[in-house]
Length: 549
Image (cartoon, rainbow, N blue to C red; front, side):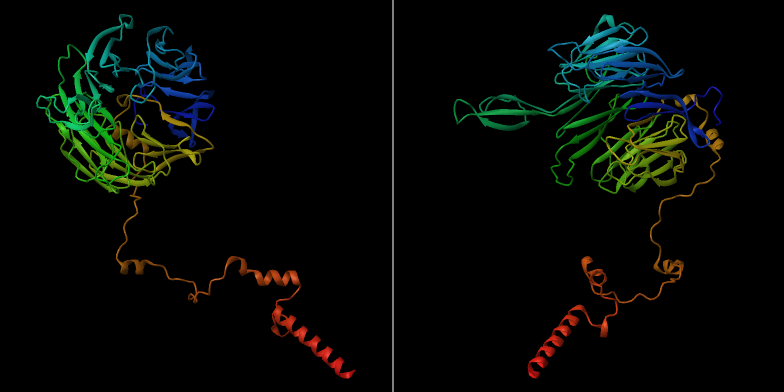
């Protein structure tokens, strides 16, 4: 490879039903990966964001931490009834969730991985996607916060013994997302709600958000009045006194939301999903994409040019542009800058997934899940399509940290058959494939893209040459198709025979074999004709005998 001697080697974590291994490469020697860590029994495994530590859950009560450089276990924790565990971005802290055995039990614990001591604990009833991890860290571990009832609590990551050092009051908050690089802002999601304002004679103080009314308990002539408060997205500074939000957006018809910060913490993509589409155009509900900036210059919808759901929206690693796949199939893909202006149209096709290359030069547009697995590789810098190929039944997909390889995996329990790993070059050519009886996980070990050499030099080291586009072209003119069609060597097709049911196709042969009748019977008669002939002969014999007597 063209990277410097200090560049780390690529590694892949592969987990099967009862164990995991760590492969080295690509590139692979003799076409097969090397093994850095042999089979280790586990039920789950996960790298820290910087790739320095590996969390391995070996049972429902034992968690081990491995040093990724030496591939050796450095710490073990015994946590009874642990349900979930996660490392902080640098692997400094381990966060565990235990199934609570009593009310108000402090079942969420933050451990210091270096010493193995607990540094903070609190109680949490449920484990959901919006509430885990309970304590969120910025990518540099400078800022940490957690969502509590009607507020966001902040901590000093250098000393958790201080407890809560700051509180941000957000009534009704249901989910938060701390910006990662840097952790300067926090986004809060407050879902839609309805509240009682009084009877029909009550003055609403100018409110126009009347929703519905129900009869009062006392009399049928009086009605209760309810007002709907819309879903609200709020962005607050996480450092210093946060008196008011720096960005705000309200909207109705929202069941779930995804909050995605860019690198630099200047922009926030908000993917809003509603379970019901009131226009009845989609069985899967309605979705919208909002874009908010911390300077307040943009707080509205992303201008999408095709109707339909938003399948995926991802920021580039630079944080200066984002890509969106949207619309009814065939879906459309568009690149936008940080001012929400369209930069490049990537065409239409059966796509629902976007994967940005960490080196910022390439992009993969794919259709996984219930789609056939089409993949298109783009050179974003030169604004041209490199190649198109397929990776059927893929469940996970990701670029390698050096930006040269793209790995897809078919894993259980999503799919129980055809489990395996495929590794492609940056231009879509297949480099490696391996099948498994059962595969649960296949992940690259995270590394900073800055640790590798320049992408153009890395590409030259592969010596791949030019790869032609594998995308099937559309049908050409009929005359061209006729001229390119090879001459047929088959005889002229005969008129098709009448349909015969399957059970009757071999009936004659079977009957001949069972009854001892040859293919050519006397006078070419059938079985029934022979029986009738014998009967007539016997009748003639009987008649001749009776006449002679």
